[in-house]
Image (cartoon, rainbow, N blue to C red; front, side):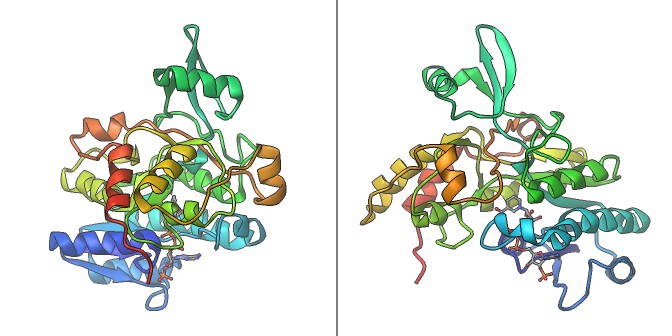
Amino acid sequence: MILLLGASGYVGQAFERELKLRGAPFRSVSRSEVDYTRFDSLRRLLNETKPAFLVNAAGYTGKPNVDACETARADTLQGNTLFPLTLAHACAVANVPWGHVSSGCIYAGAWVTENGVRREEKDLTRPEVRRLIETNPNSLAGFVETDEPNFSFRRPPCSFYSGTKALAEESLIGASQAYVWRLRIPFDEIDNARNYLTKVQRYSKVYDNFNSLSHRGDFVRACLDLWERRAPFGTYNVTNPGFVTTRQVVEQIEKRLKLDRKFEFWASDEEFYKVAAKTPRSNCVMDVSKLLATGVKIRPVGEALEHSLQHWVPET
Ligand SMILES: NC(=O)c1ccc[n+]([C@@H]2O[C@H](COP(=O)([O-])OP(=O)(O)OC[C@H]3O[C@@H](n4cnc5c(N)ncnc54)[C@H](OP(=O)(O)O)[C@@H]3O)[C@@H](O)[C@H]2O)c1
């Protein structure tokens, strides 16, 4: 039996749906039923249920966005760093293998190669960098799992949310029998305030940058596949291979959904942060070679986006 924590959340719901589709025996647990954030109740839960595997899709994300984490720092630290650490201890004691939903938001930018020299570039929107990537997309490479997070408390600036996610990863190093699955900007075909494709449509103005993205269903399938295949434990970037600019996403939305609106873009970072955001946002590209090398299949990002927009289910 698989134990699923955080099943009421945006990511947890997708795990629940996929586990049902697979006919896998599982049990979803909500804090309202058992306060699994407490070590003693968690230990009791693991002793009673004896799961073969545990999925942790619980965490504190901030609503409507990460800016809310700046004012709810205790909840953010508790939900994203202290709780995963508690879970790691409880799973180790109970000998339960598990997977933790982390985030790609602990990185900014990508690796850029120019004139044979490879460097970390945090700001991919700089005009000369943008030109380089547009003329030669191969000049850009994503972060791999062993790259040190560069959008974290150790390498500021970062948002408080990203800092707590990076700190959790650091404290999980050496956790036995644990997967750390890095999700990045979830989207799919279901119109929802948490879906990136919905968010882009609702922004008054759009912030253009380069990013890797994760189709929500593809993400949970890949995570569960890693466990089913008994792939080695450890950290995995779980995004759809490739990267896109927000402008490309907008063009696809315009082409497929034929909305009755014109999209505008923030003129500069300065304008965006002055008007629309409080805390710095992570924009980054991830490398998924490690995931693909296990044999797990996941569609390229362009294909996943196209499919989601073709099968778009508007909110009623
Ligand atoms: N959504 C994204 O854009 C995104 C991107 C990258 C990574 N992630 C990560 O994915 C995980 C799930 O995110 P999500 O978007 O599904 O979040 P969500 O919709 O807010 O759901 C999270 C769930 O976690 C449980 N929970 C446990 N401790 C909590 C706490 N202290 N505060 C609030 N909820 C708590 C709640 O379930 P119960 O109370 O029912 O138990 C809640 O429904 C998080 O670790 C997040 O950092 C999300």
